[in-house]
Length: 304
Image 1 (spheres, rainbow, N blue to C red):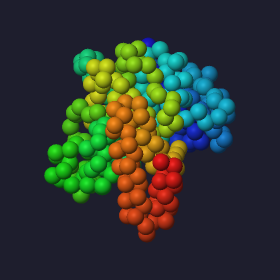
Image 2 (image 1 turned 180 degrees about the vertical axis):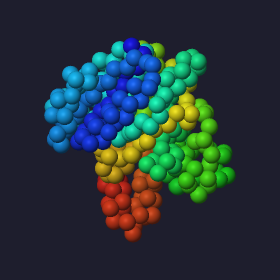
Image 3 (image 1 turned 120 degrees about the vertical axis):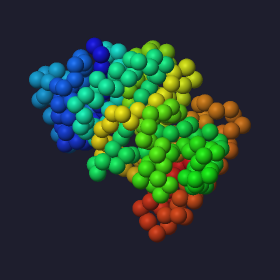
Image 4 (image 1 turned 45 degrees about the vertical axis):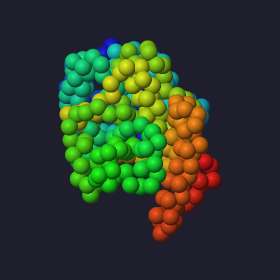
């Protein structure tokens, strides 16, 4: 088995259908052997019934959870069943549009032995490039991110940003136009070599959703693997279809806090905590005329 594709679903039946259809079309043009594993987190929109009706016909492995186990835990359930030399964690809100997507990506991984994790180019529906991953939120980066100055042209050259901006941003950066090493790549389409899993284990289930890929890349990089952004292959990522804005913002802040608790020296934890509070307060003020966003950051502040 060359590739195991793992998709976590949660109330995204139509998106999952479109995703699976695009995988089917792409694999039909590729010459690799792949298995598809779907882990459903107790969807209530007909997803489970749909999966039960197609699993045997399509040769899928379907795992049904009795509750929403979270993104990390559900992916780990899929990884436990995976037999492929390569494991792909793929969001249900993605659509493959390239016929040789898998072959081209895996060929690149085969040629570059030190690469442990790869993320391809993610596209919005209009074809524009999405930001994908970035650099670990060490204190200098956390400082510039918290103060919302990480995108200033001079500063982002001196201190690489936690979240580099896409080419659509006013700085018109070409950062995502060429292959390069990064600290971490976005989990929407996340290729992992089997050697990485053998060496560092599974995703950290203490992270429910968001930042789990950043933390996993941190462990992989410490273990000696390279993390690569590879825009020579691409797919559409619709984005944010299985999580609310509150959930994404709240979990990112909590994920950074957990990253410092787990991986950084003890003296850095209180500094990081202060910077996270500054970040939330500043964003609450900036979005004062956007009640929904302002309320999100107010709740983040209460929970920090």
